Length: 472
Image: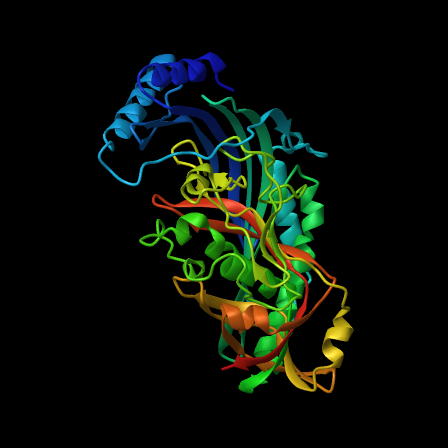
């Protein structure tokens, strides 16, 4: 950690020289990552990213500066730059402000049942090489490539602000990415997945890496060997949790980011259909409630306090089919005359905190999987996706299935190839007439901002049943 007095002196300097608000954040990321291809180590690297970020509001403008030099003089110099940048905006409109909030004074850390430090880097590499050797992949297809990437990082922060926030945090995270490529009779297909969470090496068992890889090899086998062309047209569809989770992230989470709604991400990550649809608009059926919750223990997007000092809580983006909250930091909350819901996150010391998701999911219902199927006469079950895309407003999307099946008279029958569900967001949420109880979460790295900030997230949901949607 840094000498806290350096941060306090920077705040004092900015406040004495014209800041109405000042903020200093020490931010450290240390870690180790490596890549294994078909059992062979092909690369490894260490991460050590440490610095201090400073913000100032003065004369109605907001200035940001950062430094990787952790000396008192360098931090004061960076504070001076932030203050100067804020004052340079005195003629710009609208004026910048921050919402009044209850701010945290807290020190917390995520516990590790099996600390990362218990294993050497060589131990970690050997663990994954042994995992590869022990895989029981589908032998009916030719598996040409298995790529395994492992990463751990430890994120440490100390945030102090002129209006009283003090937040010290320690969050270790583990992430595994894999890609598996297969061939059969001249046709090739690929499946990739990302697994992650906050905690120690105990997460490796919870991730069930080998089981996921083996299951995905079976999905590729079904796709390459058995699947026939998909029917098209309007039909009832049961969607698997990983597609549901992805849709919650893309079609509910991103459009709810207040900076998108205000148009500030237009040139980087896009806009939002919620610019036209106010809170209270009925966007879906009564079965649809979507929550973004940073406080889920062990989650990839876990935090208890955001990077502006606001205590985190679950945020209801859609409740019983009606649009509800935007995701706010203190700046967007001030502009919209409301309160922050602790959505400010910064990737590293060089990055300004902006509005971000954490763990976004569809709240489960009470249907079993068989109950979702039983009322589908002629439809489809799409279990896993191969690819997806969505427009800049997060309005019209396409989800293309990898493992998918026809459903006839309530029973899963033959596999089909490349079914593409194409819907707009109202159609997606309005078509849901039943929600399963089997909530599952999936790992992602959510990109946004300029320069780009990729932050750890989860997205999730249960199986759902959709009525009369279009397969193309």
